[in-house]
Image (cartoon, rainbow, N blue to C red):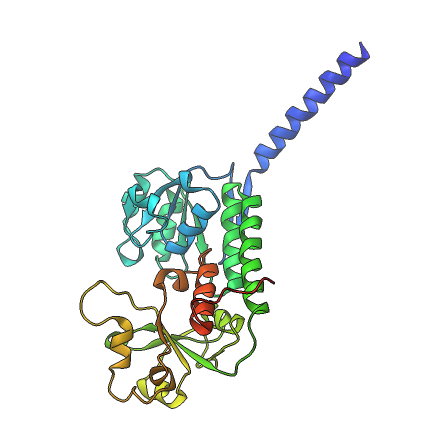
Length: 303
């Protein structure tokens, strides 16, 4: 009799515990400090930014993706997922038609009115704002918590950290500088300064950012680049198979022929998406940069 009562009590406690867990649901704080609460981990999600989409897939949550922003193109397996407009062209009805529980969006991509419209229709909005490696980890943990993939988030972060540590251990401060060209001359030069993940990738490889005195992503002039005479130039320009390559375009610019990077053949066209998105492929980007600096045939020494 006592055993039956104990079993019944245990079952009641388990039921109560499950009910409490369900009642608590999931609460995450997005990267704008907004607290977002759901009854359960998200099972239907729209990701408007490419980095967030990559993070979701790297966590094993690709099946949760019911819609993607126009520039969400990795991994290739997501290309069959419906595309929705984002930024100034965001179409709220288009998103609502996919019946998501939550939408992941960047900090500057949509207006407050659009956010309010989604939330008024019962869709939770989670905002990301990663500019450096620490911010990338925060975004990974946020998306992991939102989807119930917290453990996968920690595994992913540990894997990225291991690669960064390995590269740092195999690199020595060289005193050489690198200029990141994130927008080519024809559109107006932009670069990555301090407090960006590109600046951090440079440091991991023993380099100094030629524009470390600039904060964040900034517009610069040709004259500034020429005056700083970087040892390395890394361009993130896309190449579509026609005309000059991004490297050829840089080395042929009038006045740039005297730069150390140009004279020494140290101009490199990086994988634009890997090095420009605050996501899991920053690990690949740092390995690319390491190989560029040290020679493609040289492997990163074990940490």
